[in-house]
Image 1 (cartoon, rainbow, N blue to C red):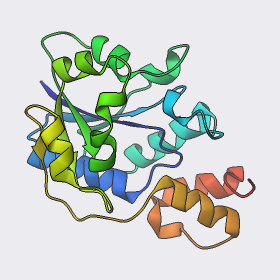
Image 2 (image 1 turned 30 degrees about the horizontal axis):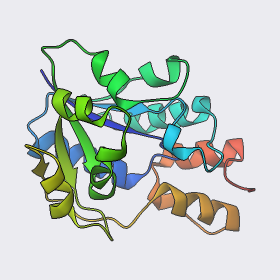
Image 3 (image 1 turned 60 degrees about the vertical axis):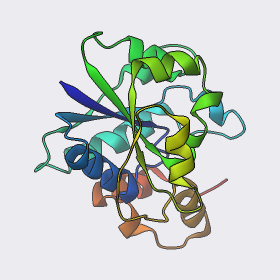
Length: 193
């Protein structure tokens, strides 16, 4: 089983996440892609993160809305675990014989060496690295043994951008799946600071 892991805060999940997952699924020859929302993302302590219940619901809506891609699945193990969310804890919760591939944008891949127990992360998983505007993907790949650089349309979309647009009342409807947009509006997420 080749399992791609697309973890993140997903605050909110958006079209670039889905495009990255599909690119990794096909180019990485994966059997499945698990979308894993972070429970308590330790690297986001500098800002308020939307509650895990909302972020998980949005991922479930996005993944559930892609009915023709049964390989996309939501995995809630990180939001169900107490304490800070560390990638190594997640990787170690899978069977040892499962082939795990972390799907990362070049910006995140460049910082793997700063992660908790980074050496163990690199030993347990392989990496599929995707281009991100403003990041040199070749540098990121050179830092990770055996990492594979995948080609995809570099979408300059970020969760931060979407939160800011929502707060300012600017339209962002087509940057997130339709069900996610409806959820954000119904629940009043990101509309205030």
